[in-house]
Amino acid sequence: MPRTKQELYALLSDAVVEMDEDTSVALSNESVEAGYDAFETIDQGLAKGMERAGKLFDESEYFVPELLMCADALNAGVNILKPYIKTEEQSEKHRIVIGVIEGDTHDIGKNLVKLMLSSAGFEVIDLGRDVPPISFVENAIKENAEIIMMSSLMTTTMDGMKETIQLLNEKGVREQFKVAVGGGPVSSGFAEKIGADGYSSNANQAVKLANEWCRQIK
Image (tube, rainbow, N blue to C red; front, side):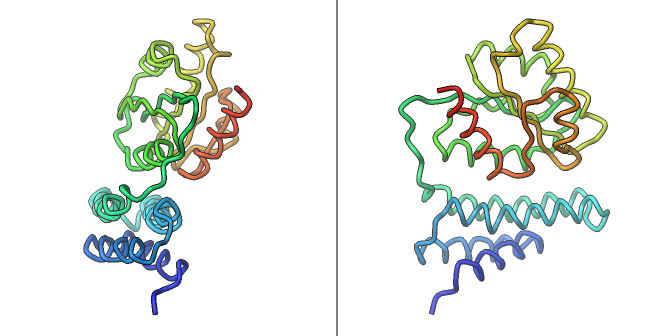
């Protein structure tokens, strides 16, 4: 008898936290064979494990080497599930510029958000990590994007998000873009304080936010 979704998701989450790539692959294959939704398996299983690993990192239970091995376990599962994600077709592709703010090279969360957004039918322009504020602004204008998403896992780099919004204002283009921020130390209060339009604590929430904004844009 196959495991229930909830059982499988819990085990996948554990596999990521325990840095177990082999188990992550085996369970991801099991999810595919059981016919469970690939997007949901990533969101409720693998991503939840990465969230737990992030909390362990914040509590100094895990350090960078452990976090990277957790990411390897997550990516091993994602690679199995990615071909089975049902991509939503949008009549008009909405463009999102995404990246990790300057001074920060932690891109695990950003990559997960990118995967989820692409699967939801968005066109995602990934600027990578350690991205200067001006690059967010210039690329959003050049690509005719509607949304800018910035992430940071370090409190020391969060001011770059504020600077990006200031640059949008200085160039007189702030109203052209919705701006979302996210990452471990980022909060909805911080987003409001710097003048961002929204905040997301995880990949699924980022997709919901983007969908909501695009309905308003229409």
